[in-house]
Image (cartoon, rainbow, N blue to C red; front, side):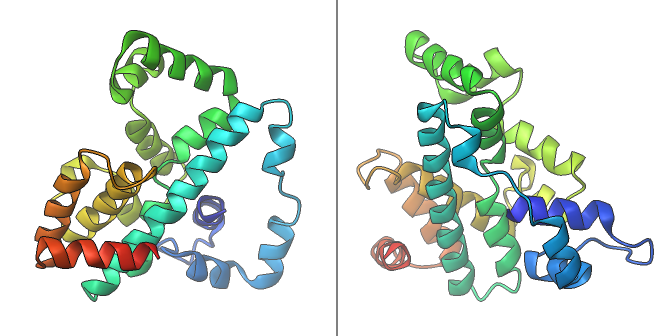
Length: 217
């Protein structure tokens, strides 16, 4: 819904509006409540779209849960750093997995093939994605954001090349941490994540871990 609103506001804005709305609140205010209700009153329901694909529905629900956790971590990090771009960081984390979500929604068989390929050949996720899709989900997501004319700060936050910028780093570390702690905190890369978060926040490892636990709760 976040992505849909931002994309709609970007392509339908008045010629008098030079720059697109960068947040959902700004987008809704820009289009007006009545226009918003008309444009978003007849949306498809996920459970109906995937009624015959229970495994795909399970995957999409899992991605949605992870996106919400990533958004929560991103917002918590932004608040800790008193970042004025907190809303943008939150949205970037929230919509990061959109390409994978769309694949499972519109091409569930392709999603199954990707999972089988990764498991059968014992390959990393990105290697499998390149072999079957020609690019990674991250690259595809960035291309989609550009195609849908989303605000440039959101597109930039999807670029690995910009990872040194603090605003981008906040979003990417939140996404990474949400993925690695999806099934608990036992993932081997969690320690590396905490070290990177510690550097971003200027806190000790222990204080950083306590903060992430507090955000999650």
